[in-house]
Image (cartoon, rainbow, N blue to C red):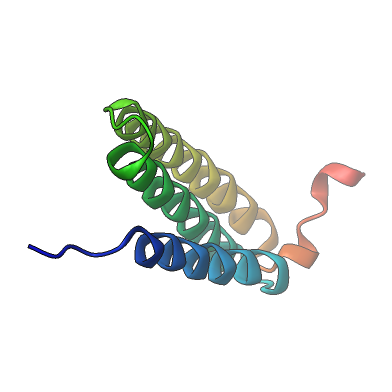
Length: 104
């Protein structure tokens, strides 16, 4: 039985992380930035599970860490969407450049 090589998982994680990083750094829509951050966290999860399964000492620790990352990502989305809705009610936009309310 031939499985998928480790390099394929790592390449997938690299591609996802780069797409997420590009989206987080270049886009002006707050929703797209939150989705990009989620994409980067999913790339980290792929790496954690890959090294947990195919690492020097295979164990379940990487998978446990991946579950914690998923929980943190869910909390991040909940808080981010709540802040975004609050700012949208005041500013009527989701553009990051116009969300400088805390500066004043």
